[in-house]
Amino acid sequence: MLVPLIPLGLEWLFTDTLTDESVTLAASMYAILIGVSSRYKLMLGTALVVCMLFTAVYGAVTVQKQEQSREQATALDRAQKGIRDVQKTLDPDDRHSSHVEGEPHAARYYRSLSLWAIFMIFGVHVTERFNRHVLNREPFWELL
Amino acid sequence: MLGLQFLVDGFAFAGAGIATIAAGLTVTRVIRNIRARSELRDVLLNKHHTEIRLLANKRHTHNPEELKNLQEVMERIMEQSAKRLSQEHRKLINEGLEQVSPQGRADYIGRILQKAEEKDAAAHAGHA
Image (cartoon, rainbow over all chains, first blue to last red):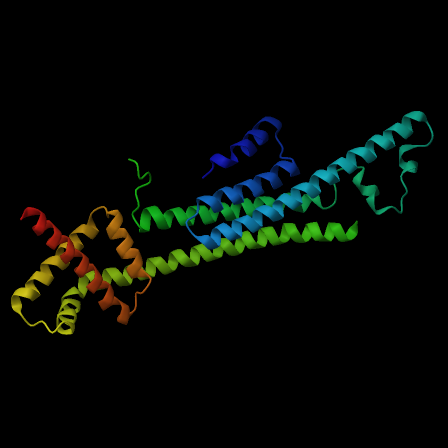
């Protein structure tokens, strides 16, 4: 159940933080993995949709991060050249100006939503396994 | 750009929402399974005498010998249920669960009995 989340755990262990890209990608991969291992067609379809949605979110987060770093690089470049002060190079009316400092405004809830989705999919998996192995008395490994 | 942002936000919320609905559906399904099983257990363990009699009546059987045979078959099935279920038995139970209703029960038990009888007949044929 937790094996697919090992990369996420390792990232958290080594870097003490989780990037938005990792969490959204993990949500997407975890959804499809659990969907494929499920025996219900409905769950497979649902997982497929969740996977596609979070893949799109992953793409958006990646693009946002790239834009953010590009903006930061440009701002730093301009500052180094002494054209203007870094703050003055950014138009205060520009709605993207907040991207320069900190994380993109949307990313903070992307991470929460991805973690929520992972938690819910984990719940689906636990419930389904309980149904199979406890209620239906299926042996955990048929081969054994 | 703002439109795209809203779209992606929508994706994220939809993804989390669908995952939540899926979790809810799975939990509902399992609760339904638990209830159905309890009902089936009730039929198998407590009311099986009545069910056998009903089944026997349905088959127009009043022969005590045949009734006794039905009883034995039913008890064997119950013994099997108590142990680890075989693949075939599990399939039967799951099929039966789909139609746990007063009307479906008799058919279900009838099917199990028929299977068991067929198995017995095959075993006898094998011995012969």
